Structures are given as structure tokens and as C-alpha cells.
Image (tube, rainbow over all chains, first blue to last red; front, side):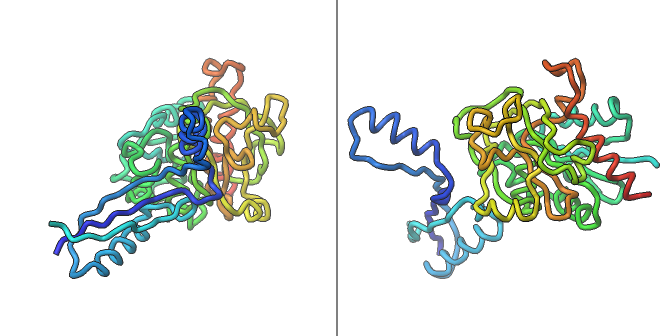
Length: 87
Length: 236
């Protein structure tokens, strides 16, 4: 079975995100969206992976991302957003 | 002794030829430019990972190159005490390979910063700073988009004296204006615990000949002279 695993990599809160703050301060706030207090950007990966079930697909992706340093644990957190069966 | 240095070439490296030129023609030691898959550590007394955009900086600067066989060879060199220098993208590779602490993030200016800056020597007891004076100020150029040094345990760096260079003003003042990329604590370069691995964002190979410097000095060459001195002192 093939699964689609969606993964987001984002900088840890202690690391400033100049792209996110530019979007929030220089675009949103200046155009009247002052209800937005913060924006954090990241990287999105959609990984197509063969596995026996959803749980194994997620575990495999997490292990792979750790082993290959797909995310940098010094600066980034990794979040698995979703695991879906590929149609 | 005949010192032999390897300058590793990745797809997307730049200033690799500049570094080789400085070693061969300015300092006068043998430096070979070697494709990353062909590098064998046993022939060399030290190695340099040059600047550039290895593998297009895809995913993150330096991460793909950090998996290269050349980096495994460099690890062997480090373990037996030989010197390894990472310049700019080379610094990113060394942090991604976990030979050096921290990481390099996108500049807080969100721009490619290409200009001459001033750095201050914080630790002059490394393989690449032993020919400098502590607190000496050096003129040196930077050229990077991802040079914002980040490490969430600054105390550890201070306790272990691992900060080698900091960005300062011309007068040597540590302030925000002299920090070109938003690096934590103005850090421009760090070393490992053993002091034989150093990474820095500025380009010493572009500051090793008077003709290339707007300040008409050769401050960058001190890094390479330090490496030569380190190698010689180990042999003696």
C-alpha cells in the first residue's frame, strides 16, 4: 500500500523567523490585518511511501527524517501533519 | 616536510579555486582540488571545505554535502587530530555533519550579504587562529544568504571557549550594526572541542592578497598560516 505523509519543518521558537515576521509586519499589519500577532514559516514535504499500514508509514518517515537529518534538530522541529492512503 | 592540503570540490562549490590558489601560490604549499567522491584522507595533512552552494543548497545549506563520502573522510582526519576548515558553505556542511555546534539560518536581513566586515579573534588557540593575537581585528569579506549563527546553548560555547571569531565594528565594538546577518552573539566562527576543526562564514581566501583588499592588507592569510603552523608543530 502507498501512503502520502505530509511533514512540516519549522524553526524552534527561540530562532527568529525573519520571513514570518516580514509577512506579518510588512504585509498583514500594514494592510489592516492587525489582528494577526505572529506568523511562522517553514518547509512542507509531501512524502509518498510504501508501507503496510498508516502507523508504519508515519514511523518510517519519522525515522528517515531523523536518520538523514531531513530536519536539523539544532534549529528545527518536525511535525507529521497527516498520513493518507494514496488513491 | 611537504605539507599537502585537500580542497574539496562539491557540485556548486565556489572559491574552491581561490583557496587552492592562495595555498599554492601565496603561501607556497601543495594544495589539490579534489572532487568530493574522489577524496581520500590518507594522502593529506589537512582539508578545506570551501564556500559556495553545494548541491544547490537544496533543503538547507550544506545538508546534502554533509552526507558526502568526503565528509566521512574529513571525520577520520579530525579524529586523528588533523585540521579541517569550513569556509561559508563549508561551515554549513560542518555544522550539518555535527562536527561543529550550532546551525546557520537565513540572514535576518533576508538578503544575500556581500561586503567587507570586521571580525575579532576570540580564541587564538585553534588550528586556524594560532597566528593571530587575541582580540585582534581582521578585515574580511562575507558573501552569504544563510549565515545567521544559531545555537540554543551559548553558555556551553563560552564554557568550552569554542567561539573563534565575532563580527565587530571597525573599532572592535560588539554591536548590532556590525552584525551583518543577525547571528547569535555576533558569532562569525566556532571550533570543535579539540580545536582542530574551525568553521567561519567570512572568506579568508578572498582576503589573502593586498590587491584584493580595499584595506590593502592580507588578514585572511593568517588562517592558512595558522593551519601550516599547526601541522608543523604537530610533526615536530
